[in-house]
Length: 178
Image (cartoon, rainbow, N blue to C red; front, top):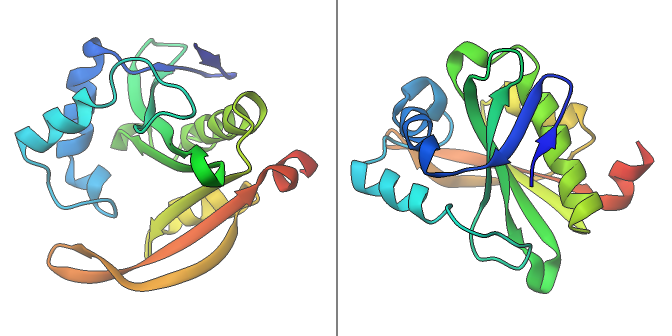
C-alpha cells in the first residue's frame, strides 16, 4: 500500500522509520498538545505495535510515514486507529516535524488519509481529538469539513495541568458531498 499526493508519499511505517518516530516522540514542539515526554520504553512499545500487517479490523494504528516527494525526506507520520466493530469509525492522528509545519503538508496528508478511510476502507466516520488550544490542528480539521461535536472538560493531563479535549467528527456522506 502506498498513497501519493501532489507533494507527498504516504507508506506504511517500517523498521527504517524508527529514527523519525523517535524524533517526533521526543520533540517538545511536536508533543506540545499531544503528550508529556515519552520514555524510551514507551517509544519502543508504540513503534513496535505499529509494525506489521494492518487491516481495518486490526487493534492497532495504521501508521503511515509521510515523505516529501521532492527531497525524499521523511517529515512525519499520519494514520488512524480503527474501531471497525461495532462502530465503523477511525480515529485520525498525525505528527509533523516542526520544520515542515505550516507548509500545507498536514492538510495534504490528512485529506489522503481521510479519502483512504472512507473510499478504500468504507468507514462510516472519522473522528479526531484535539487538545484545547491547538488551534492549527482544530482549524485544519474544521477546514476539511469536520464538525466540533463537543468538549470533554479536564479530560487529559499535560505538564501536570488538566486540559479539555475537543472532539470532532466527519461522516462518510458529509465528506463525499464536499
